[in-house]
Amino acid sequence: MTEHEHVRVAVIGSGFGGLGAAVRLRREGITDFVVLERAGGVGGTWRDNSYPGCACDVPSHLYSFSFAPNPEWPRTFSGQEHIRAYLEHVADVFRLRPHLRFNSEVTMMTWDTDKLHWRIETSGGTLTADVVVSATGPLSDPKIPSVPGIDTFTGKVFHSARWDHDYDLSGKRVAMIGTGASAIQIVPAIQPDVARLTLFQRTPPWVMPRVDRAISGPERWLHRRLPFTAQARRGLLWGIRELQVQAFTKRPDELGLVERLAKRNISRAVKDPELRAKLTPDYRIGCKRILLSNAYYPALTRPNVDVVASGLAEIDGSTLVAADGTRADVDAIVFGTGFHVTDMPIADRVVGADGRTLAEAWKDGMKSLRGATAAGFPNWMTIIGPNTGLGNSSMILMIESQLNYMADFVRQLGVLGGRVALDARPGAVDAWNHRVQERMKRTVWNTGGCTSWYLDANGVNTTVWPGTTTEFRGATRRVDLGEYDVLRAAEPAPGETPAATPEPLGKSTRTKKVEAGA
Image: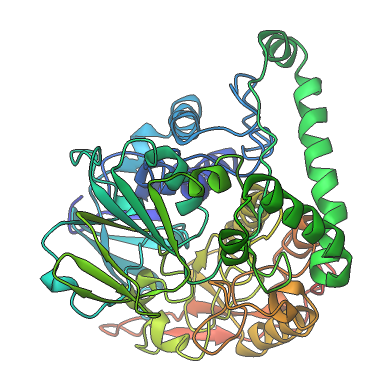
């Protein structure tokens, strides 16, 4: 990149969101764009998470783009290596390679009010762009808690998303910190090889059986020859999850049956009543993400495994001390402690029209319009933004809905013509988020009695969408210009710098506004 390079659109990140945005831009006839990626290859979270046992908990045929079906999925729930290979395939098939800029981590994005574009500084150079599509994702920056004494630990320490494959855990005493989606895959994968495994469990998860199997050769042949069969399979998987949504969002008491099944799953695998009590949650199922595994509970019953039903409080040399006083001497610590979801580091690197960073604008909680745009940050949008997460279905469905919104956003800029930008109106952002939070009040995520990564520091759920994927698709099908201020570059007098002025608009007459949940 050179100092004077300018593109129509800059996409940040090359995971599902970034590659999906690139494909959609090409389909819209836009080829003047780049995809800025901090690493050396595509894949996002499926590149970074390569820990033992890493796999998806959403069925393969639903966890893929509708416009890029894969008839060759080897299992009903695919592993990390197959998902990453799929994303590499998407980059090749849709000819995205020329647009990819690897080893180009964004260090700062600053809105230029006079020139109506973004100045983007990266580790690979500087460029400008009319529009920025941030697809860094909420599961990209690992979170390691600040544990007193961690600097005194003499062994190996790493996060599940930064697995050290050069370090052999065989015969080692290992501490696993956390019991989330990564931990329940790591524990059974490493348990047979380590000398001793100590699991520090602050809160037990609800774990259901994983109905996984190999997809047979005849099935794959059928999906290749008759693509509608794969579409039907995807449609069935989607429909089942749409029907489940009301139990999470409107009637959490209906989850009681699922909870009883989960307790039965614990009882079948764990015969020791003391261990079973440690592993049984005291909150409503669904409040945290329901996890899937057939191997987690059996692994915890093995003689070389200890479950400490308390969080890690401090470290004293090679000794880990839990909040309840339990001590364990270990050689290695694996943190499965999640990611910066409600405090994404990228927000510190986005400077808007008034000179504030996105992190400063979101200091009281993340807020966006339809999960995409933020007031004061013209021509900037995010994929998998605030309140777009799901608790029971595939995020690819939500990503594709946001790609529809992105496509119409860029399309509207073209219709308006000239040097122009769209800035979400604060009132529109507030109105959208008020409706979302009103709906959130009765969901299991807010009423289930747990503390989860869905909630921010203020206890507000800024992560999950409180409705169906169908509702979200309807809400993001079109851009309503009535929710935006239109900024145009004023014609300058001789020797003057052009200045941007807002162009107030009334409610758009082109499309009917879609309310949240309408």
